Image (tube, rainbow, N blue to C red; front, side, top):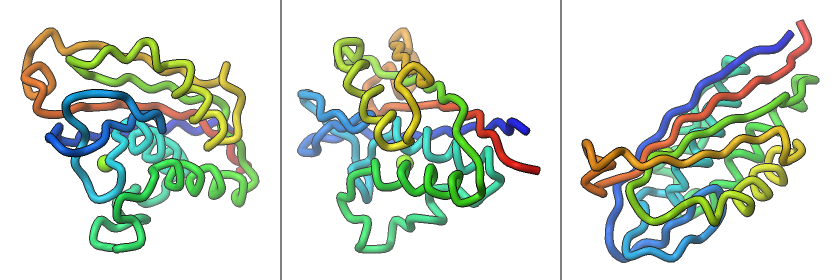
Length: 159
Ligand code: MG
């Protein structure tokens, strides 16, 4: 039986932090602030997978007060979600994610992001959609105060 899950995440853009999206370090004037590497795209994907399983969200699995996860690469979180799917005897069918970012240009990095997601989740890159859009200069994304990501996951779980 295929179950769907949704994930949503936001992180603020600040000076003096690296910008890591989908596990790809992207040159930019600002980076995302957070306890881990603040990879908003991987956080949304992780929550989509966890949500499809009806499990608690990323913030409850990996507390932002736990020093273990300080500046941690968020690939670890996605890998754990995928591990939980396998532990339940299931498989991730596909993932789709949309990123809202006014700057920088994301398109050149999409193939590398897909490759990283494929490796972290253990599914082929052709089962992974990654898109980026600007926010037409509207709202906090438009003012370049932060980035937002939405993800959906389809997970086949035994009944
Ligand atoms: Mg987050």
